[in-house]
Length: 428
Image 1 (cartoon, rainbow, N blue to C red):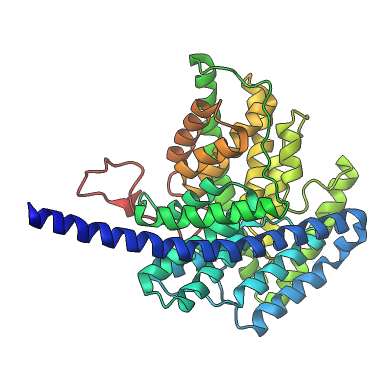
Image 2 (tube, rainbow, N blue to C red; image 1 turned 30 degrees about the vertical axis):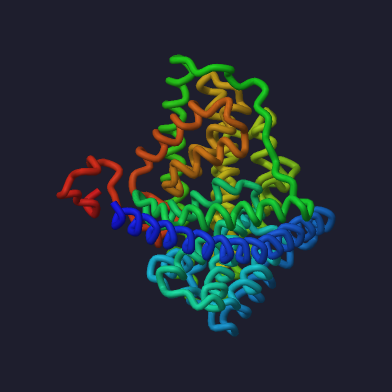
């Protein structure tokens, strides 16, 4: 009996020391990340408003492409793979240099200033990974702990920007290795994300909850069936999105080998498309991150049926040319605009269809069903949880092995039973 008590006390001491160690590290990383995330958010709001008030800034996009290329080449970061590079660094425990933080900060802001179609979460993940790696060096952590610390930073900046702490933590744990969830990372990642979230709120970054007044009050067979069909359609859109994003970069590199010229050509193409779209629709909804278009869709406004394709083309041209930013916010925009139209076709309320499409396409593109379900709760509340859970499950399975991120590893197949010892993942 005495030996059991001693063993229990030893384990209790070990768990307690580990808990408090990561509590201190996560609080520190979360605090720094909150400041960086809020500053980044303010800058993006400012440059977006500046672009809105001065439409002529669009014509600076080719020059911005040259400047971004220059920055990355002179800092020795041209071969950096962006978010994919951070995922690889977490998996291998190699870390990323701190200079990535100011570099992606400035480059993403410039992309938004010129009207390139890019998000902000790619920058958030890269800045967070850089902050986490720097903290790991300061705290003298080993390679395994470095991985956890980088996930803390990624979760924290993501949380500060989007106001979704639980989604941020779960996404950063779930996205790198599909099918594997490292529970040892949950406490540090969640603590860091919550710290950044609370500090961001204190600094004026209020989270946004989207209302869905015409959504069904209860789950029923008829609406559930329509949701399943919409989930299958969202999976198809997510596959198209992933294929398009990967193809655009390859096409640019094949046709335009010189990086500086790629930036110029991409900028010119965005200018031409923007002017054409403005002449036809009278707006600039497809420039920038595109969340404005997603909000319109979720508010029930009528959306042009091909809006999701137009946004996809804008994003492919922007990121493929070497402009910096992220893919997730454009993905949310594509999902919402598609869901609004497809949902109405299936007999759903367009605003509710937009919300389902936003979550469904996101889930299919990033292969993170748990994070996607929590995203729906933090964006729309828990009243419609069953519908969002259904669309995530369907879209996740039918999207197969396609992913926005080439560095994402499918550790467990979506097809085989989890106890199958002969799981031939690569064949599927």
